[in-house]
Length: 291
Length: 165
Image 1 (cartoon, rainbow over the protein chains, first blue to last red):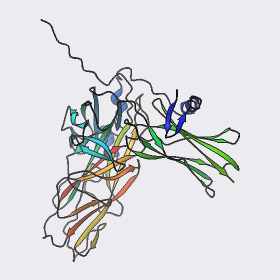
Image 2 (image 1 turned 135 degrees about the vertical axis):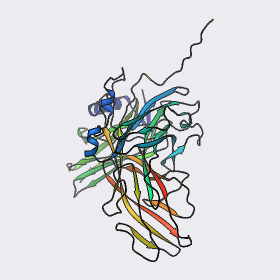
Image 3 (image 1 turned 45 degrees about the vertical axis):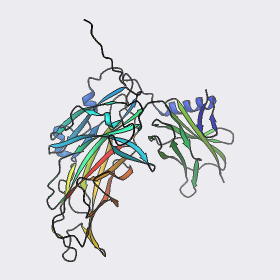
Image 4 (image 1 turned 120 degrees about the vertical axis):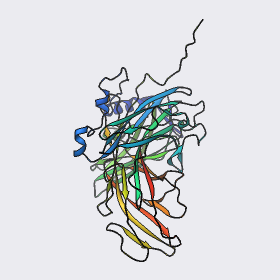
C-alpha cells in the first residue's frame, strides 16, 4: 500500500512500519465505546463543580464535552448530550445556538446556521433551547444533527450563549459563553500538504527547533499525530520527539513544532517528520549539519 | 393491517473521543477597573460619568483625546481551561482555543473594540484563534466616542464565546 503524502512524494510501506513503531510507543490505542458507562456523570463532572466547593473555587462555567469528533455519512443522524456546569452563585440562563465553522482567510469563522451552502448547523435541534443552570448545578441539552446530502462545512459549534447579564445602566456588560466543537469526518478524505521542514539550531541555548507547516487540502478534518525522528549519518536513531497535536479543518494551515533540548555532536543528520491520521500517513524529510 | 418500521441510520456504535471540559472565567485585570461580577461568566464595566475634556477617569481607566473623538479603555482578563476527563475515549487533542466577541446591540455611532479588534452586532469577531489554556489573558476594552455625539448614557453587552480548537 502506498499513500500520497505531499506533492511529489510517496510514502513507502517500509516507512509505514517505522512510523507505526514510533507512534504506537507514543500514543495509547483508543478503545471502542462498547457499553453505557453507569459512572459517566461522575467522570464527566469537571473538578470543583460540587455544590460545597463553589465558595472555595474561582467562579466559572464549564462545558462538557469541549470537542466531539464524529465519523458519519450524509443522511445519518448524530446525537450528543452537552452539559454546562455553573460554578457560580448566580442562576445563569443560556440560549442554544448552532453555527457552521468555516475557514476564511486561513481563520475559523463561526457562521450562523443556514448562511453557507450545505449548512450542517441548520439541521441542529436542541432538546432544550433555553437551558437554565442553577448555582452549583448543571444544565443539559441534547443536540441532534442530521448531515445533509451535500454538506459544506465539516464542523459546527454548539454554543451555550450566555443570556444573564449584569445591570447595563451606565455600564458595559459582558457575558461569557462556551461552545462545543463538533467535527465530521464524512469521506475519510485525509490529505495534507506540507511545506519544507524547517530546522533552527540555537547555539547559545543548545536547542534545536523543528517546524513543520501543514495545510489540510482534503475534505475531512484531520488531527495528525506523529513524531520527528532524527538519525545520524549511519542511520542510527538519535532522537524521537513528539510533535504537538493540532486539529486541522479543511483549508486550515498550522505549524507543528517540537524542540530537541540539547546539543548534538558535529556531523550530518537527517530528520523525518512522520504523521498519522486514521490510516493516512504523511511524511517529510530534511537534512542539517552540526558544525 | 401491516405496520411500518422506520429505520434511521445513526452515527453510533463507534468511539466518540470526548476531549475535555472547557472552563471560562472573566476576571479583573490588576491594572484595569474592577469588574462587577468578576469571576463569573457575566461581568460589567462601570465607568460612571465621564467627559472628554474635563475630569479624571476612575483608576484603571485610560482616556485618550483624538482630533474628532475620544476613547476610554481598560484591560480585563479572560481565563480558559481545558480539564481532561476520565472517559475511556478521552484523547488530549485540543491544544488551544478560539475566543470571539460580538456586540448584542448595533451601534453605528461609537466604536467598540476588544483586544484591538472592532466589534459589531452582526458577526462574531475573532479575538484569538490560538488562545493558551490555563493563562489569564488580558484584553483591552476600548470605547471610542465622537465629539459630535450628544451627552447621554452609552451601554451595550459584549458576548465572549470560547470554543476549543
